[in-house]
Length: 81
Image (cartoon, rainbow, N blue to C red):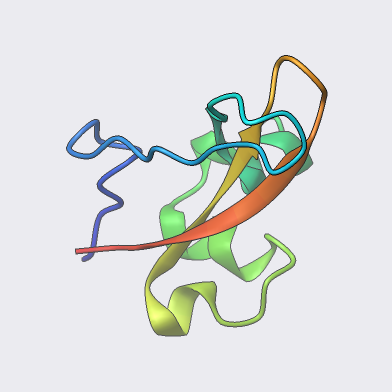
């Protein structure tokens, strides 16, 4: 089973806001916002309901990146290892 390097603190993603050039914070997996109890399910079940059709097949983890200064947000897909 693959694992996300961001979820497991093996990697830090440095992305900057296109609006104000502040560093975006990693707010975690998108599925954590969609289903607050989703972390109790196994990863494959969570990926079936995360709203992205290819996360399980392509072994990617969608993370919500947020600018705390201006409110900009974007989803970045992280390749699992």
